[in-house]
Image (cartoon, rainbow, N blue to C red; front, side, top):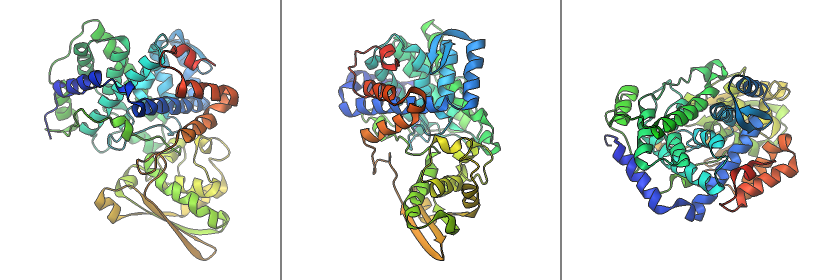
Length: 435
């Protein structure tokens, strides 16, 4: 445990500058995967009615030269907001278990409109640098109960990414970090419980704050030393924090999601997909889910009335996987969301805290289903994307095609995937995104 200072962040930045992360093929590949996966989530999110409406409002009220999906005429800040809204709308986006959040989304939302005249390599490098700082901030600045992470520390890593993108010196990047640290907001978990979509605004706020802070630092605005630790004390009531120093790439420890739901939901959903092959889901009589305590705290929503409640619902995730053999963005659209079988199964799920997994601080779940008078049980301790069960590039690409094809068509989706995954680092980002 330490008192966090700007010197700790400087050490990480100095290490990254010397290490040249793009020369490590594992790191470069993971960064490409994160970009592709996030862009697929954005394209799927843009199809939601509310997100589409947000895009039209932003284009009308804050016009500029940026295009995102079918929405043209966005300013840099409005494009960052829209990208962030769409990226997390279906909760199918990346994350990092150690950071207890998603280090890439706010950074990518901020970089999307700013990197139009940059190369693929420059954008990937900015993402990696911002990600590495963001993960470390997430580990150190653990939020209080009742808060939501998205409007919190992600702005700090995103400010580093923007600073790298716009060519700030290390000193001015640290000023940008300090400017953010002086005004990190308190973002509440309450909208998730209430089924309100205001939670989806948090990452856009983080992205915009990052851009504004980097631009301010570019102009010479300064921040006081000690702002990071002052925020930890005043905002989070912490006198000391955990800190992971330089030397290991945290981007290699992040995850991409096979399911469109909060990560805690995935273990029960994976078990449900395995079990449903053994019986007719219409014959299910009882369901029990034994899972670690943290999952029950964040994902205990029952009979969810809105998609965001369902995305944070262990019972909904299990029921959807049992009913449809899927838990993707389309489950939250009209038709499937209110399916009678899904809704009946959700009411049957009994959620119990697993003391063994909780005591070991270990993720995983055991699902038991009574169907046709016979109990069936499946335990899952790793899902696709975990370090013990890593995704393949083909799986990452397949998910992108599934999420992007309804917007771009399959041929164009495959072309975009090929560019992001395989194009040379010198390719201009305008060509990477072009469809």
